[in-house]
Image 1: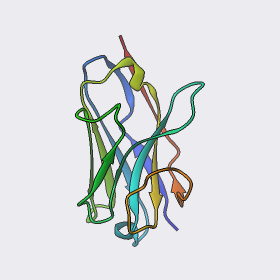
Image 2: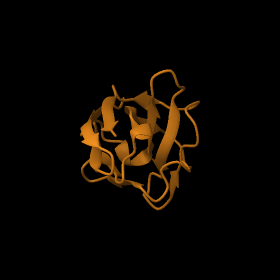
Image 3: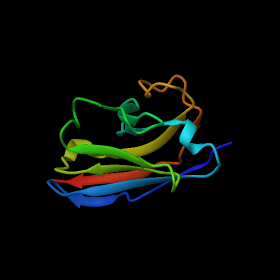
Image 4: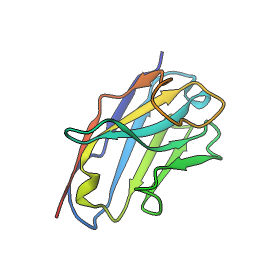
Length: 124
């Protein structure tokens, strides 16, 4: 069993930065690929970024490439999402997710655990 708790969301002006953190409980965190999804009002949940359990491979949605960076610290059971150059269209609830796989997460169909979500609001 893995519990995920996100933090770091908030209100920021366009062009600003935020860093989301996701703290995981359980001793098997390092065996999970981790990901960040987001869901804006009236839109479907979408994958933003994911990272291999080793940290050696990452994936980014085209909309955030060059602006967001996902990383993990297996010793601290934590995954991060550094978000720079934020845009109003980045406004959404951001969810941390874990999938027990040897690959990176590519969609939400096999996610094993979800966090409760953290709101990110970017004002223009």
